[in-house]
Length: 266
Image (cartoon, rainbow, N blue to C red; front, side, top):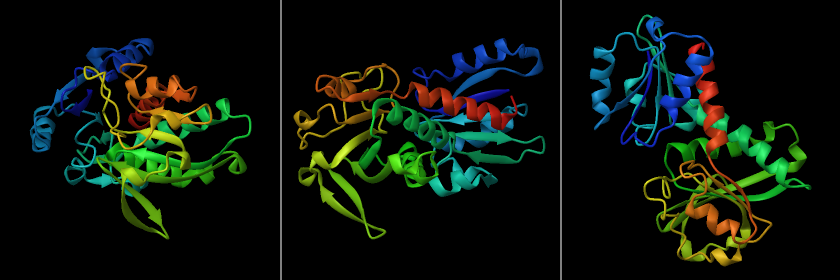
C-alpha cells in the first residue's frame, strides 16, 4: 500500500497519477498496489496511521508536513538532510522509515529544461524564491547545486528569499532581512513561487508582491510557479501579459513522482 499524507488533499493529483501508473504496469490492488489519501489534522496522527496500516510501503508528504514529519522518521537521505524537508517516505519490511526529497529532483531537472528551452543565451542572474517552506528549501538547494547541471557556463544563479513582507538575502554566507519595498525587481530575472497562493480553489490569489511593481516584468523574465492547479495561476497570468517566459509545477510534479516511484522500487 502507498499513499499521501497532508491536510486538505482534495486538490492532489497523486492518487490518480499513481493509480494509473499501477494499472499501466499491471500491478494489481490485490498485490498491495493501492494509493490512498490520508488526511491528517495534526502530524502526531502519523504514528496512528503507521500502526493501523502495517502494509504501507511508501508515502508522499505534502503541505503542511514536509518539515514536521522529520522527527517521526528513522533515517534521512543526504539530500533530504540538507534541505530539512521530506516529501517521500520509504517504509522497509522491518518498519524502518527513511525520508527523501524528490521535490529537489523534480525542480532541478524541470528548471534546467525550462531555462535552456526558453533562452538562446542561457541564464545568468538572480532568482527570487517566494516562500520559506519545505518546497522553498528544496528549490534553494537545487539552485545552490546549479553547478552540477550539464552546462555550467549557461546557468549561474544566485538567490534570495521572500516571505510575507520581508526578503532574506544571502550576504557572505549570512542572511540579512530587508523589506519588500526595497526590492529592485530588475535584479531578479527568475521568480519562483513556492507558496500555495493561487492554488485551487483560491485561484485569484497570488504572491504578495504589493510593494513590487509587476509592470516592470518583461520578456526577459522567467516565472516559475510550483502550483499546478490551475495550470495558469494568477501569478503566471501577470507574467503572461508582459511577455515573460512561464512554467507551472506540472512537469516538476511528474518528475518528482517518478523519482518517488523509483525509491519505492516500482
